[in-house]
Length: 347
Image (cartoon, rainbow, N blue to C red):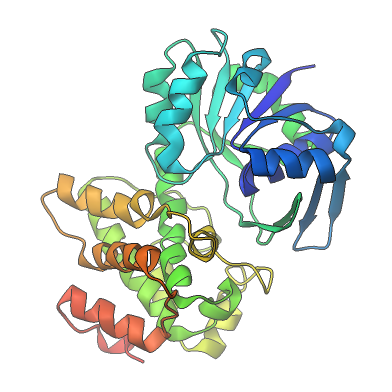
């Protein structure tokens, strides 16, 4: 049986690894001492928004704090926060066997490149986790929204495809992952808005003012992607270019049109919101910051996404976490953009 290692036993890593383990795969975890102690004591309890549940007892949970655990792996799933990618790459470079498959299941669009540069003897693939996972307690992880894992297609990955299928996590494979990553990033631009709102995702997205903020960030990113000749993949029932307009419709109409976006556990929040709650540094530089970097490469500006980066960084430093109303955040972003919204976007 192939050996799978999860490098980064956080919410995503524990959920995906736990599902694979529950499906019968040989899985080990590498994480920090806090999580290692929890998994050794509690095992892994998993749940989904559709009321499905799994539990892996402690005696079946192989978890370590040492990167050397990955030396025996045939497949390594990297699920650390983006800021930790260079350190993860350096550690893995010292232990992986030549030919090991490494998948970046991380936010942003450049983490696989960082891993690839440090791991020339490995096959490094970009992957994407579209759903939200929250840690509900010691060893307990909940998938709060729908979606399937997506990954770059390569023959080297095919021996592992059945492992994911048995776990109920079928892999959607793509020849080119960059359009998929940008499509996911366009949706993830809401992470900052959700973090600043300090509300559950479903509650935030039910309010038009917050949705217009998201639409502004997405329109800005879409204009830059068009200049860069990058066409985001279709990862939702609606084409991504339609979403900003749908976000601006009245709440009652959005409730009908946006049912897929609202297929979210009522208590789920973005990972960025969870990071602020825990006093951790967020991934803002690898989400909205990616849009800012793209603008800079094109000789353009991205004032809306740049302002969202500034606000989240301010929240990281604040003694008291802010909770922005939709109207206040919209007014701030409109001021940053330097122009009023079109009439059909106004509250």
